Length: 278
Ligand SMILES: CC/C=C\CC/C=C/CC(=O)SCCNC(=O)CCNC(=O)[C@H](O)C(C)(C)COP(=O)(O)OP(=O)(O)OC[C@H]1O[C@@H](n2cnc3c(N)ncnc32)[C@H](O)[C@@H]1OP(=O)(O)O
Image (cartoon, rainbow, N blue to C red; front, side, top):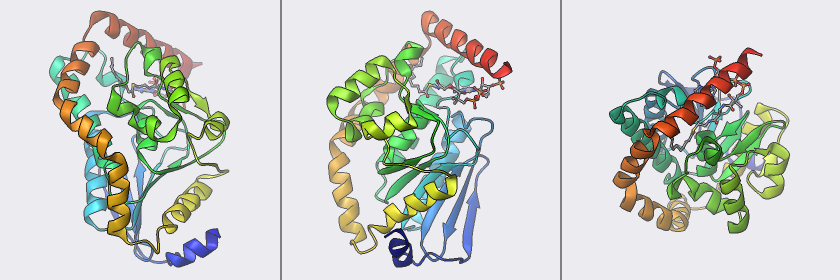
């Protein structure tokens, strides 16, 4: 079945076009028309302003190039993305916080609202903003022994409604509510059981192949009809997001700049650093 779909897309060794920014690289296979967007901001693809801008421009470039689909993955060997760069939130002024949050919103809407078939080859851990990116896609294949989830409440912060949209698209309400209130990070195996990911794979290559295979399932579907149908499913969340977009930035800035939240972030960073030195 997999090979059939690859064949339908005409997958074989063919020239690829390459585009890149400082922290992303895009490879479009000329034959399949599918773009592989790799995040490459070592060590953990943490999301600072520049990284988010690069990601957004790569997503729009892929969309404007009329690619047949988008596969999001990481150039890092064990982390898909560690989420927002806490170093850019800690001790940051209000303007910096507002810019960071605006860019996170921009990336999310570019990916969640993309008309293209989107898939995530999750070749490493995907907490918080990493999970946000993966769940904005339509399909997920993930390596074993990793974690994925929205753990914001563990940092003493609240995931706004648009950030929860991915969960709500994928998980039953009861499970989504419990996982979000617990700030739960799912292991790969738990994520599969819950339906948060679609497949467990043994290598990045297999993850990419599964994603390509998923995109191949649309080979015989009219792209415009497919895209409009997808966006009809997502329209309510997108509309709701557009309504509160600006206020959401203000709310984030006001929450993130509170001394007690800054203290939690500082402690969290310190623990991360201690752990990485062990
Ligand atoms: C107040 C805010 C209000 C609302 C915000 C709501 C939304 C927030 C969305 C977010 O995304 S918040 C970010 C949450 N992210 C996390 O909780 C993940 C934290 N990181 C990890 O759990 C682990 O690093 C990992 C599982 C992703 C990878 O583990 P491992 O491969 O063992 O790497 P290390 O832990 O050794 O990390 C290497 C290096 O990178 C630094 N680092 C890790 N994550 C971040 C990060 N998110 N931001 C900045 N820096 C990060 C870590 O401290 C290490 O740095 P060294 O200098 O010690 O090497």
